[in-house]
Image (cartoon, rainbow, N blue to C red; front, side):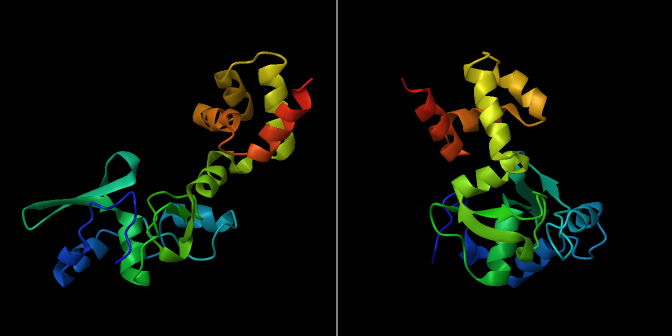
Length: 181
């Protein structure tokens, strides 16, 4: 059986039919959630989101009690596995095309590399020109990463990833190459 590097703690053989039914009962598949309408209006997806209704811990891990037992994991990963019968291979992740991290609709999930998932995240609304301007602000006008993040309305960690070359690496490399004497 394939493993998913970030979710090796999910013990799939323990997924009895009653646990699977309990899991699905924590997901709104009615298509009536506000998240569904926002993602569809934005044109990112053509079907409604299926948000997780149970509690959520850090990093999107779901939690719920079932027959006196505490269960946790990543709801979208388990939903993908239960509907598709496979997991993302090592080195790959599930990207939420709808940008709703609580969505469990497998039609909204795509297997991608971590780099692509990060690039599609907070930095996805940026253009190459904006990233080039960020480099000019940072290296030629000595703006802080936080100032750049505030100016462009993105998270500081996204700016950090840009300057490390994790995302928008082609713009980052071209700018640095152009600065070489």
